[in-house]
Image (cartoon, rainbow, N blue to C red):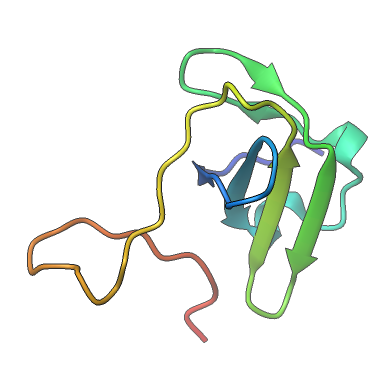
Length: 92
């Protein structure tokens, strides 16, 4: 079954590579070998590991490549009106 979704890649301090954050309903209970992440530049990578939380509808895909582009986490105490933010998870 092919499922399509979107996400964002982030880097965590002390963790190699990048982590793609997406919705759990996109990945479901798939094994890493059956999941492919297509980047905007056309590259295709597979996660080394998947962490999923169906209740919050969040899945983290560990992509073991330090050269991947990723966003930085912001500081919620420093966000100003009008700045873009992203939120993932179940609205329920």
